[in-house]
Length: 419
Image 1 (cartoon, rainbow, N blue to C red):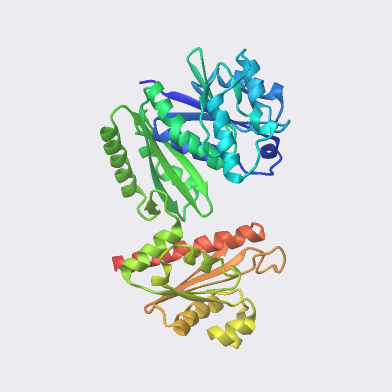
Image 2: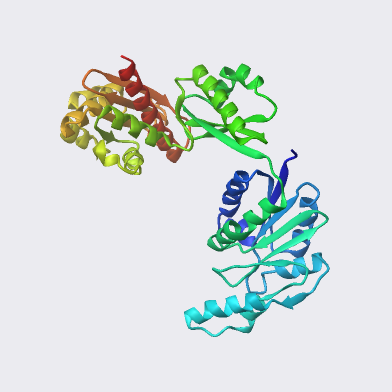
């Protein structure tokens, strides 16, 4: 079965200027994948007739479906409807059901319908109107030479309702699509290049209908397997078999399957082992605490934190010895070890973790340049420390350190289970 290809075209200067973020395309891509339609390109264009027409001409040469968002408002800069009317060589005609919808919306608000809003009910005669029950701009469905063009509002909640209620079901009726299934494997603590080298032989044996994508992010790489076929059950089984093989090749790097964050995976380990944790943070300034507390249910294992940014907080609240600070400095293995052990004792938790480093952009020395960071994990049996060296800007140094601590925790907790 041949793939059905879609292209998403977003219209609006505000997107290109960076004044708003295009979240519509990501949502549409996920929903289209669920019904077996592949998005091959996302194009953003300005509020320019020539630019919009060029985008439509190009898109229909490579896609079966063109999904257009934006430019359907009542003001002069909203050009999409008039451009599509000319593009499909038709004329605008009043669509009475759409006008009734517009009147109903304004009636609920106690406002008279203006002429501008009334004009929104005039639609190209060649289109099939797509009802918008949440706004005043109807959508438009065109068919030409086997191609589908659908124009929808750019307002996210209006577009999503229109897609869910009408557009997606209608596309499913119109096209016979193959099954597309994704499997996601989450890894941490391994660079993308190293990971690729490690799994190269397995990747080379993947069948043609299963593709692998590397999706690197802060501190890890998401591996996404995408399979396409006619039999959903068989495809699901085949993909799971490949994931099982991969799990045997890189067991130490995998922290979860599916869309799971590292802090969620670590939290689950703490819950399973019935352990509690507290954090002592210097250079990360509370980001680690935020990661833990952003997970629903984290109160079952996360007890609290001390932001020990100044040295006197390290000594008075965490029990770091003044001699240690004088001899080795705040950014040292000895200091971070005492911070992790101190927070554990202070809050009477099973585990304590700590961070101390030079996030930058200043504060570095020849011996300890910017990006020099120590982290530590302490439990009742052991304390594990690790030196990190990041040559990044301040925010990235903080974010990478937080991920590194979470991964150190993951590794330590798994090692405890294996013992």
